[in-house]
Length: 421
Figure 1 (cartoon, rainbow, N blue to C red):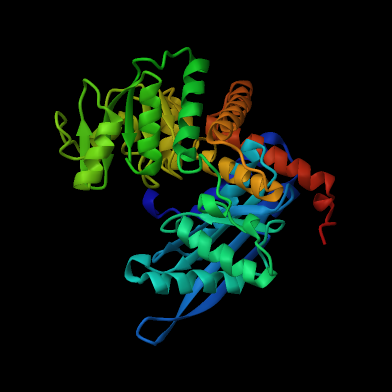
Figure 2: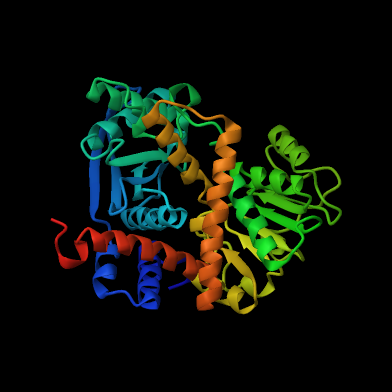
């Protein structure tokens, strides 16, 4: 099986088993964590604009709730499949545990192409999905959020539909909402900001001066553009960025804000004045100190990894590095900050949003950013300490920290003795 056809569910199971064995935990820990506690499949009938009825298939996976209610995004995508949803829910458990958030992991999906739906059809689908899963979600049970091809407007429709069922405004059901409906300040920049915080902390621990460090950002979408701007503000030199249409490369450095303005005008970073276009492969292998993959999964493969020159890789995207590439990079001495930490700024501010909804008291963007920085730094140092103590890659160290926390919660609750029922 090639790297790009690896089953994410099997990859996640392997990562969990590896961490359990490295920690010397009892086999029951792996047996419970190797699959979701609950997995739901629903059928969602939607009246289309032409009067016909189309039935969509939706999923919700709730992996583990030993530490708290489950939490995870909801994606609308034509190619989503059950094992992908299962794996994503499992990774969310460990992403939350790495940060010390009082959540377990969940993930939801609907098989559809939102680009082919009108706004009214998209609203009916969004409301229909919540109707079908309304009994298994809620502020104390499972809290969805935006993911691929979903957004604050879709979250607004969903929280409105759920509130009808509850006969009160249940804004704590969902995070990633518009500010007017209880969304949190700072949420839009959270993923990119969190990534830059841990990259800067890694540089500090490694004795690297981030001022003047050459940075490459693969994927100049929301997370990538925010990360590019913020690391530039710290004094680093962003020498290359790209998107699905091309790249902008300049050894002298780029202004990320100007590049973003160019992309908004033209649809791509390609053609930015004073830059040259290079291939995605060449971009990943540029001579630089810091690489931030912020695009799709499986970008750093066994074929690419030997040519990677970055000293620090901050995974702002989910799953950008294959297991084979991970080992190659570790042996090369490259510090890979894993996605379950580097991309966790979003879920951390989602946690802040949930807390603010429950209190009905809201923080300023400055307060949110300060709290986010504190949590990201603390979490990175916990993982880096494990990495140094056990002499394992940061990814394995992250899973060891996360699995240890979830295992402790399961143990004190009696789950490992078969008393979960």
